Length: 414
Image (cartoon, rainbow, N blue to C red; front, side, top):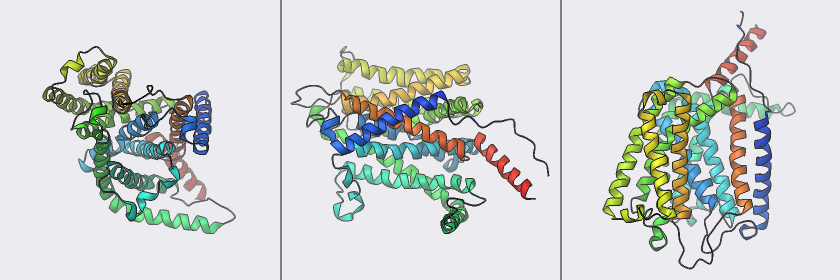
């Protein structure tokens, strides 16, 4: 048996971009560890008036929203039976799994007593009236679901056996048995985990929009609305596909292969519909609450609110309904980036810009270590994503490489 050589070479593990990300990651990790040792007061500009900063607005609220591509893509491919999108489900699941993992890591930095994060696991400490409790439980369970959904990729990687420790072969046998059991059972149950992931995501995405409803006198009228949970859910769903498109194009460029533009263009066709629903409800909400005067006030709040809607909603709608823009790499990347930027800006506006405590001594601005930790977490996430794509069958590129390697192994054995 002869195996035809593949014309695809494995990308370099160490590149200038990886080195830069590694430096940023190292600085962020050092700042993170210093925060855990020294406490919030020593490293942040948070206060009693401003208890939440960029670690909540960016690392948690934005991170959860941008990880929505996992459940939206899985729902489209597996629940709505759009089979042509199956090839982008794995990268979306990986992005969501790492995104939620780093959301939890970022949340630990923001918790004063981070070592008590396990308390919600105890029924005696449950508080059913707390929105944060509901968010925490849903994120905890959904993260578990994401790791289960990722297991088939691990199984495919180690289908010919696990070699973790040469000294302790019993460990290899235990892990191999676990993966074999997962391979036998997950195929029959993965659909139920997909449904569970969609339900859990909808619950905590909307609940994040409920967090600021307890502060009506401290929120700017442009962002304080009783249907904030609906806006958070709709915006998370709307950004799911653009995030997958953005990740697909950027990773394709990084790993030296061409993105599937026809497939991504087809996926982008759903985004204008979702954004239009969000925009229409936003206009109705502004009208019913009679706050249009704040939109035209010419304040920093009105400019940022306008940027959310114009740059993050209206312009992407126009771009994605224009055929020649939607079918080009630059057009897809630009439109997707605008949607992502609009959602991130919205989360920053809701949790930081719109919030005005009654007795604040000075406005909040993140400290250098806060910024450093945020950039470090993002850089570390990108590096780990790159590691998984290079070493596991996540994309078509890596899948074909693993298939070729498996075939070559089988040929040598014969």
